[in-house]
Every structure is written in structure tokens, then in C-alpha cells.
Image (cartoon, rainbow, N blue to C red; front, top):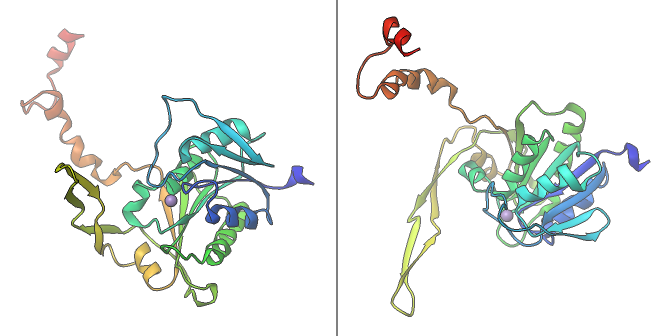
Length: 272
Ligand code: MN
């Protein structure tokens, strides 16, 4: 029976003992064979870091449960390319303690794990729960499960992952689900400068958020209005619309300050 069940990889960046991961893994076991491969400690905001200069150790904590002394991206690589007997049909990263909205996706280990899954050809979702200390993981799990089931049925487009954020409120009071775009955060006092007891300066990168741009249809707007946010993210971050503009720079960059756009054919011939 287990041979026919969908193989699902669960990881996170809050560490293998995070209740968000445990709750998620338990729920996904209803629809597939769950494998947990996660960092042995919290690795929040490590983004897409990989460990290259020290050995990775894997500890089997239980049946199909592995802790790794590495980053979320390390975990995904080890899981997909080595630990699992075959690649998973789905990767779910989370449930993260705290939202990953807008620019957060660039720093988030939770989202990077899902990106790495996507790079390796595994349909992947990142799941994050709004909140600071008391989390309504039941709401996060409910929507993670729905999205997971739909992906198993419908698949995902190539190079595309889904970023799911769930408001921190009882499931019954959630106002809906919206497909959203990424917003942008604006920070106030992003760098905090202080002096230690020895008179030396130290810093915290710890801005207090004051506002968001890209309001209409954005992820933060959905969360603020009590709705679940689902953002499709594409791996290709090329700015395709800007390519023509920069192609006009090509001759200038190739030929230094000269404005010559194309070298005369005689010159090209002599060079060849
Ligand atoms: Mn985290």
C-alpha cells in the first residue's frame, strides 16, 4: 500500500522541533507518505545558503524523520538527491512561525527550501503562519492540505512555486483565499546603532515596518483583511521587458566610450 502513496517531503527553517513542522507533517500523512528532512536548529532568514565548507551530518530521529546540521536548502538537496528512495512528488516547507510576504521571500529560508525543490523539479509550496507567539496552526494546516491536494491533482507550471500565507485567526473567521502578488516593505530606522558596556558601537538590522507599497492585490493586503494569500513565484527573475533597453547598452559596453554600434566588416575581417 505504502508504495502507491504520494511521497511528500516536509522541511522548514524553524528547525525540526518546531510545532509548525510537526503539525504539518502529521496532517500531510493523511494524503501521502511523509518524509521529514529539516535543520537540527532554527535557521530563519538564511535564504538560499548552502553549506560547502563543513561536513553535513544526518541524524535519523524516527521513521522517515531526519535532522541535518545544515540549512533548509542543504536539507532539500540531501533529501531529494540522497535520503529518499525516489524524489518526492511534492515538497511542503513550513509551517513557518511568521509571515513571508513581499520582499521576505528573498531572505526566507522557508521560501528558499521551496525554491530549491522547484529547481530540482519537485512541485513545492512554502507555508507561513502570521503571528508572534501564539499560532493558529490549525488554520495553516487546513489550507496547506487543500493546496497540497490540488497540486497532487493538477500539478504546477514549470519553474513555479507557491507561497502560502495564512492569517493568525481561528479557521472559522478566515475571510477567504486570494491569489496575490508580492508586496514591498518600507522600513523605518532599519539600522539600530547602540553602544556596548565597553564603549564600542554595535548594530542591529531590525527595522520596524511602517508601510507597504504595491497595495492592490498584494499578499500583505489579503493577510491584513483576514484572508489567506497564495502567490505564484517564478524562478526566472530576468526582467524580460527591460532587455531591449539594456541591449542598447551592449555596443557602448563592448567598445568602451566609443559610440560605434557595429564594427565595419573590413575591421571584423582583419581581426578574424
Ligand atoms: Mn522561520
